[in-house]
Every structure is written in structure tokens, then in C-alpha cells.
Image 1 (cartoon, helix red, strand yellow):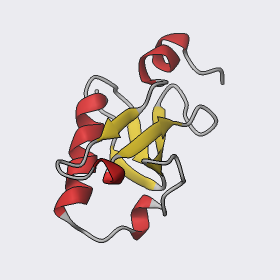
Image 2 (cartoon, one colour):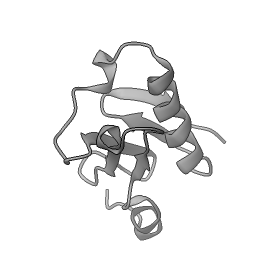
Image 3 (cartoon, helix red, strand yellow):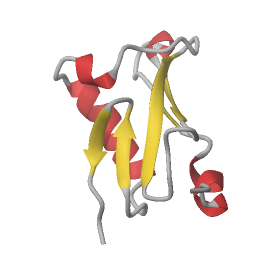
Length: 95
């Protein structure tokens, strides 16, 4: 199924998570067109140098991980489908 142009336009820029003290620790979460659909958004994590990070499921439970999740949920708050960070579903389908 072709990805809806409105969804693609709205989310194609992905989102960033900025570290409060060290810009070298900033992250970019890039929209994955090939893994997303009209009911599922997938963002893949990259470090400040755009090097792929390890899968989100391998991250320890920390305040930083929760900040990434909160940032992603804020960015996608009006999307009614699933939201994934790498291989972790952080939002279910809503009505």
C-alpha cells in the first residue's frame, strides 16, 4: 500500500532529541519510509554523527530512554496508528 502523502509530508523530517549539556549526545530519529505505512510510523535512531545507534530494545531503562519516548509521542500525538522506535512499539492504534 502506498504511503499517504499527507503522512509522509508531516513525518518525513523525523525528530531530534537534544542532550541538555552535551550536543555530541544529541540524537536524530529519522522517519523510515520503507518500514512505515498509513497505520504505522517507524523512526530509526542515529547519533549526532548520523551513525546508526543500537536497537532501542537493547537500551537500558533510564531517564534518557523515557525522554526519547516522550519526545516521540509528543511529535506523533495526533497520529492514530502505531509508533515504533527501531524495533520497539511505543504507541498502539488509537481511535
